[in-house]
Length: 105
Image (cartoon, rainbow, N blue to C red):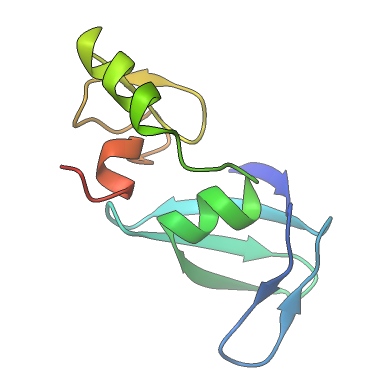
């Protein structure tokens, strides 16, 4: 498991909040749209979308169309974790590339 500090507050359906700066552990990537995080402050695991993980936990922004085009022209795409993969690929953690997250592929 890899530990991250949340870049933004995560407001859960239960009403609980994982605060900015709280540690979370990437426990599992269930599929291309859903991740499981362990939240020590809640002492339990939660499911969040890959999109929410990228934006709220990692603090990433969507790449621009120009950036996506440049990557595509060079035969790769990046993931929110910073790994270079095939344009329809996933990284070593199971996180899909931006093309998939953004619904381009």
